[in-house]
Amino acid sequence: MSTTTRPEDERLKLGPTYAYGVQHILTMYGGVIAPPLIVGGAAGLSGTEIALLVSAALFVSGLATILQSVGIPFFGSQLPLVQGISFASVSTMTAVATGDGGLPAVFGSIIVAGLVGLAISPFFSQVVRFFPPVVNGTIITVIGLSLFPVAVRWAMGGNDKAADWGSMGNIGLAAFTLLVILLLSRLVQGPVSRLSILLGIVVGTVFALVIGKADFDGVGTGSWAAFPTPFQFGAPVFQVGAIISMTIVILVIMTETTADILAVGEIVGTETSPRRVGDGLRADMLATAIAPVFNSFPASAFAQNVGVVAITGIKSRWVVSAGGSVLVVLGLLPVLGRVVAAVPQPVLGGAGIILFGSVAASGIRTLSKVDYDGNLNIVLVATALGFGIIPIAVPSFYDQFPEWFATIFHSGISAASLVAVLLNLFFNVMRGGVGRSPSVVSGAPPVMVSKDQARALRER
Image (cartoon, rainbow, N blue to C red; front, side, top):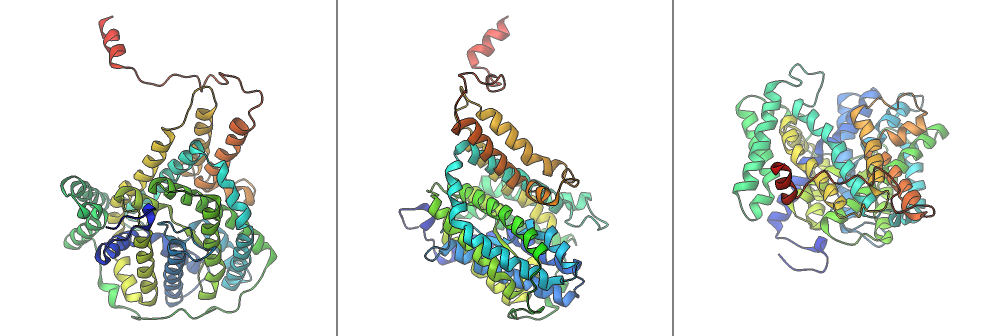
């Protein structure tokens, strides 16, 4: 490996670069194909048409990932960030797709909202100065926690309508995969240990095939190669209501992408200046605005891949760009995409426990560096974590709220980000009137004792 000024600029040999890149793709593949499956189904598309949406999603995600990680002037954070089709926009797209405009109205709203996001990116990126460690650590922790339900659903089978949903067979397969990854992490040294996630998924898939819980029969069904046809579903339709709703969603996506940029910067150990955040947001929004041309949806940084960076220690952005090239190929060669899609969901669930937990652990590590004496930081963390957990614990909590409010707060990441930033402004920036011991909560002692104190307690 070569030594470079920035950790993310490190270049690996070609083989490891693509091996680690494939590891990223396996982790996020399910998240990329879920939105086109859901929206396509809601729009009443045929199986063949939905397959076109899936291929387009992979193709656009790959190009967006390369733009984000490699970067060109003014576009791309040049960080190991994987871009994919955002799940945050699914509910809005579904509502628009089932209306009079159908998919063309969805695509029209995305184009306009993406251009709005592109225009405000320079201003939006300035909020990075309001993300000190107490805010950043809280958001990173919530990112990890918000992903755990995904891993659990994968472990249970991925489809709650299936007969084997939550069966011991599915959960046992997830546990087997998790055990393989843990053993590889403990017993294998060197570069191979950093591939423990990929190897665990491979071993888990082979084991699933042996016990009859993996099915590769459908791999050969369908076309082998196809290029996305621009505006396959017709010219975009521009509806005011759809555009307003999608613009709100774009603001949420920009908040999440900002959080992911800061999170991966913290994990990599590199500077994330407002300029760099702005470049990352511009790449995100440019990909979003162009995506409808190729029949796809809003792009966003994928939080689960931040976990891959954290758990493997591979910080090179070139690994992620290699993964992006794999996504492009998967989009152009549907047969390869079907091979990846055949990986059983419980196998991904076992890997997800470690991947997503590592993100939360990184956030906790950042929070451990925060000063909690004589301030309200502990109240800030407690409140922001609470708002971040609400949609995770009770997804229907905001169902009766106004749609614009529910759109923002239904994402634990955006809710925690907004609350943490506002409380940081209120508690730490506007300092007037804050005393030395401002809160009984912040004055609570740590729940721990020293060895000498423990000995004295035992002797009483």
